[in-house]
Image 1: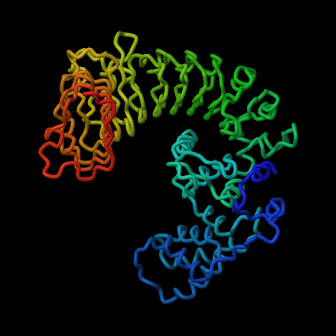
Image 2 (image 1 turned 45 degrees about the horizontal axis):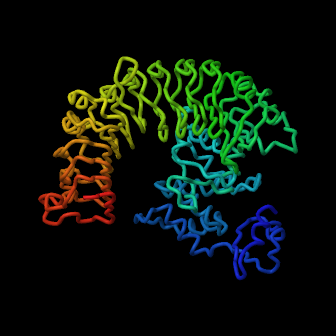
Length: 535
């Protein structure tokens, strides 16, 4: 009804399409006769969908009994696209005798518990045991909830297992976000039983059915604007909770009672996953260090200025997410103790002044979006990057003016970090004596896709910038390199699609040096931005 009230403000002639499996919804919306009941797919179309997923467009030898198998397949799918896709995926790469065995399973004739399609239950039955565990974990996600691929992977990792499953791409086309089909959600809930618990599912007004919660290992809920301790009374009944996961709701700002963080959470001593994402917290209790089993800690978009010192005793921690913690000025000095840490997400943390000392001891790190170059014994200089060989995706090196010796830049070993797709190099002041030498030594591997340089104050760029051997580079950004008079030969880059040049005020003209030695410069360039080029 809340949704219906907004529809009343539409302009004359506006049309709204609502899809649902519940006839009551159409009555609530006042659709009347304007209802189109989707019929099941025809047998031929159903089999075409099945073939696309069972054969993946690869020709296979057809058994003489294939006609009979085809009839069974169509019958099992009941004209439902999801069933055809799922059955096709289940039979992919299996021999015809295995097809017959699966199609004749007794599971097809079991009662349709909780409206679960038999084909979905069968596909779950054939999963390996560790993948069944991961799939059941998905039941903590509400219907129609958009989730990030990477987030779910890290949660699975915290549980000790990973799985590659087929989800539907979100219809709003946000990259790497997915939703689960509601029928698949039902299957996950059936598989999880009482192990996974969504707080909203068990609430009746202000009362929670505590009996449904005592066996829970994983719990989630939609964050409210004001989450007071009473909402979490059920958590005192569970003894071995592993996951405490708030999910983003309708409010841009969320508040959590101090009693929850200081009194309740420390008692959940078996937690492996703890998220406080989006809550406007300013501090965490020092007792968080007692959560010895913790593997995943998400403090994104909180207002904490520092982490408790005890955080560095969480020796099993694999993932620490600090994205958007704009008040965070420093990380604990002994962060190097977290030797199992694989993901340290400090993106959009602009107030961070330096990295703690000896960060290079975290040799398992795979993601570290920002590295603030420091100097002095209580900070990490650029050499600490050298031993982090597993870094991937994006690396942004900030305050490169703190690199005094160009040889230290060479020890960062950027040439050997072949899993990096994007590299951003940033200087914060105009000291130019050593900057060319430093840039020379920061040459990266040849398969880099995105390069950004900001605040560089040298008089010219290093020779590796624009080298045609960077054959996969698709985007380059040069920003506020105010002393360079000549642009590098970026026209030689064979895959460059996007080029942004801003604030290079010393450039007076663009000549053939910009094209380099290529007979056909910028062969695939789609977008060129020139801004604040005053001369």
